[in-house]
Length: 221
Image (cartoon, rainbow, N blue to C red; front, side, top):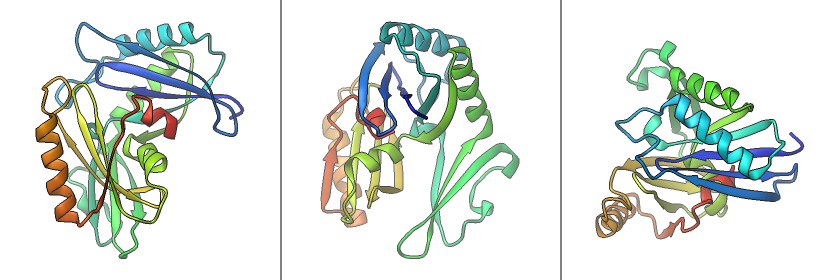
């Protein structure tokens, strides 16, 4: 992909960054929704609304890009750590999801399962907006690349309007993901930080980072 778009459909906004083949950001933009969320952990993403808003954002950016990479909210995926990369550790029929496995330093595997219907929905949304979806990955992966390039395990806190993601990563790779509905809209910063403190203590993590930039996910795509 020579020039491509990185797109994050968040709970209340769509963020996009246009990058060249080296990953340099050429332009970025955001479209916020004020009449309710695009989706949440209990509200599915509406294809037509998402596609229309994405088209509007691309028009404002005057983007000519065709290819796109996109992030997926943590609440749209199932993650676990298992001794082997076996589908038996995913609580659903293998025909219903796409599974990825990442081998960890201790020999175990970080398993990630995304429902196939969610993947198809994103492909339809991007096609309706005139784009070809080349890559779709859970939001924790670009966050890990953005904030945890060192070997030291790092807890990354990404607080959104309607959802907060906790990612543990090292060497630019995520190996633990947790999601909470405590967020900015619930005015629960104290609760979020206490959850982060307890998680870091349990996992023996010393380094904690908060993703302060609203474009943190698209920056890492």
